[in-house]
Length: 474
Image 1 (cartoon, one colour):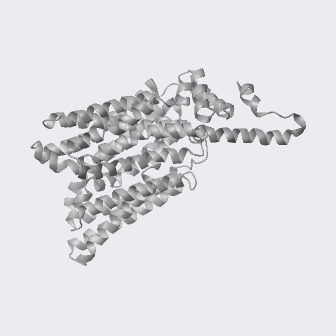
Image 2: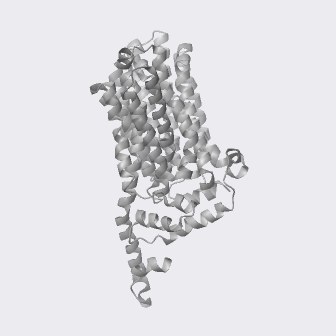
Image 3: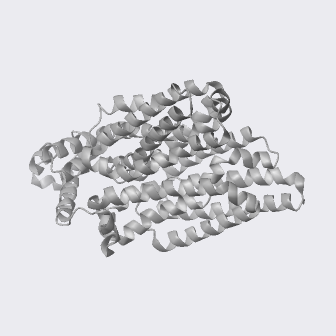
């Protein structure tokens, strides 16, 4: 295999050793240039799952008034419709690793899309609460699976120098999906918006016919020939894949000596660090207040007399721009520094919001309160987008060894959705207890996140998945 690959690259005889080395290098580089288009195409196809994820989240905000009026729903019934999404996503998260390990990364993407399509059609044809809730549950399930499979698939196909940026596209597309939902929700009726939300699935289902399966998964299930074909497709005809292929194979041989991990095995000493980092980052991402702030930001703006449409659209647009900036910086600056900057910014955003509500409650500087709130929310969303939004997903797709990737990834994502549910469920209760106290509490949680990241989270940029996992799971 190796001899075969190298032959066309080495054309000179021995005296020109230096020259042929140069040519071989150019051959590899030339190959890499040719090859990258398949990595880009595969990423492009997969991240439509993330865009779909965003449309699912964004759907309930612009449609609330129209759906409750047309179907005559009580506020309690609409709240069930809004929040049942996270329940579906938790179930999706728990099963996502098993599905992706059993029928492959592409198979899991197809399953996910099928659930979303069924869900949106159910919402489109809904005549009452039951069909609506079924549809929302199904799209939630699809989201839960997407939230695991998309970053894992992209990380497994990417060359190491592009892996961070390509995996971070996942979050850029989620933010774009939310924004598209908000925007189209102002033009389209709620039923037509459900059909619009189907389109990303259609693009992905067609695209999946054009791209290879994850080579690492094919190697893991012992499909040697398909593994080499897939890796060759991703790296290009000219590229020398033998080094990468050997590294993946050696790593798998080491893994095969270990038993396939069950949930309880995740707490063995050898995996404990990677599981703590993966799950811990999801806790940092969700318990610092984001789901509550995003779900109810219209109400936050209304409560201080700021136009909610301007506030929410400014936040959604800012999220796309800064998440894209994060994707550009992640392989240059590194994961750790962006996470630390991001969490420090969240503390600042929370303090600004707390100050605004404190002033409002004590009727001080009332003219300044709306500006304080807008600044606080935008600082919060902006700093979240630059690090804590995308990077926990990137790190999660990098640190788990293949034999625990399914169960550990499922656990991390379940924690993510559980955090979403807890934070969005408790937000209104906390605000009625004390509006500025709520933001002080979030500031403290984000402060603890800084400590967690500084002590435990390693830098993973520029290393292969195998190197990262060997270093963490000693």
